[in-house]
Length: 325
Picture 1: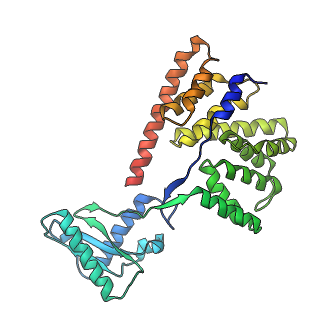
Picture 2: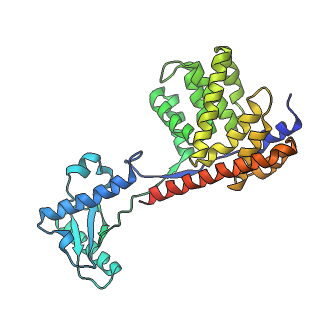
Picture 3: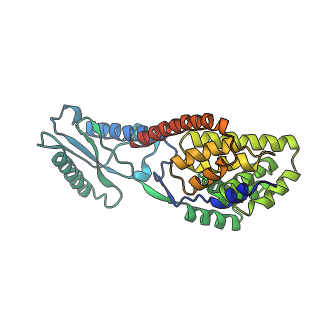
């Protein structure tokens, strides 16, 4: 039995995600390339009409009627926009954009495009002004759809949704994924993967995970269990260090729950980082874990925590900047 500290630690965390922004129909693609591709497609479309945008006078803007669900890689390489608008030699940028949108709408009406596309600013002077559409990705809704697919015995489709949600840190999806792995539904049976996701689910806060953990362990050798434990720890460290804060608490819990002897030093390190990012309830847990540390080791752990924190901050900033490009 672990100390009372561990019991406190086990009760205190629950990390949930209500939504995450995603681009419809063009997920998992390079946002910068998509934006650049849209500008190139606009310039190519303008060339069809013998209007070289680069030769226009500033302030100049270009608009295109964009049908987002058709923005494939093939379209960006060879496609043309059906309706365009442009302006030049306008007093200011905002006015030039309004004029370009107006021209695009007139062309859209002329070609009777209706609601098939929307006129949007693509470029102003030499600046890429493409705004990628953002829709809300609702975790609860996606989870419900995955469960419905499972009940319909469409296991492969259900599996894909659970994988996506599991990688986002959804503990219920991780648990269901472990069940799919254990039963071999939607993919070949794998007790190692079942144990991996059931343990991850427990670390993220799913109370039902213990049953699948026990069943999976019975099917594995001690060496395999150790391999999975280490793999999960390393993956959580990578995810957390790359800027996904949802992995911080499960990682801190790993060091308490998984080793035969709780590693309070590393648990404190990751809780210190989590509390620095103001992750809910982590300050109390950090202070409880702190009680188990030896004074001579505290300063070194805090320095290490600060170094990792700075790396995470840089990675988060880089991710945000990439998303804006």
